[in-house]
Image (tube, rainbow, N blue to C red; front, top):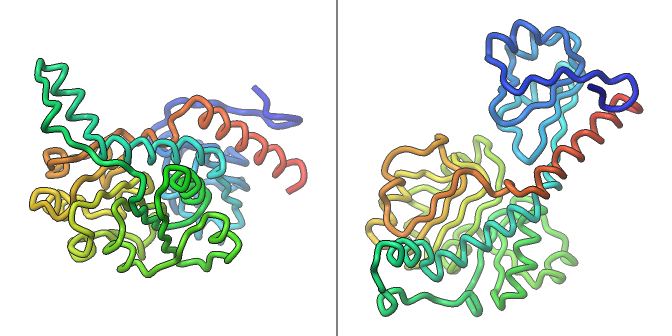
Length: 289
């Protein structure tokens, strides 16, 4: 199999840690998905390695700093998943607001709970975006068409023209949590963002508001979230990512939740695009560096 001129591909749909360590020294590049960890041990064994490529957004399973220190380039394809993840976030907001899962389960079990399943509309509600990267911007665009107001928090300065285009307003993280009806997280997993949404921050959420996380599981303290859902401080939560996957613990039995198995970018279009984008980046790297 080839990936352009003079690039031979050894496709291994499954590989154990031990196998990876034993063969790592024979490759100029790795193309990996989320199950394969490229850490210091692997990088030290991979003496010929020049490139690590990861289709999709996250690089949590790659020691990027150590790779760079060893002269290894690391690339991914976050641009390929934007539409899929953005649509999934909007789907989760709508499902929470109209209690869609409860309605489906109840009807299929023979119940007819029309009067008790009162929902609410997104129009006129406030959406809080934590992180305004590609996905955050696309969600803001959709939210405005639905008649929502948009608040934004990001550690990076957002150009005024972007805020004007999106009709969004920058606020502090505390203000975002206390003012938003829906909060959606779009941040990487770093030491600074680990459990950034914990008991203290959840206690400042607007009563009855909803939290959506499609970024990284460790950003949310799931035990604290489960407790906030049970006591009614948080009105609902939709999680596509978890601290441990598959998830375990109190979040599985917490009320008013929608839990999906990390499928934000799992569309035919997104997956095809992710592979195409990474393939082109690998080809370009070995063609021109």
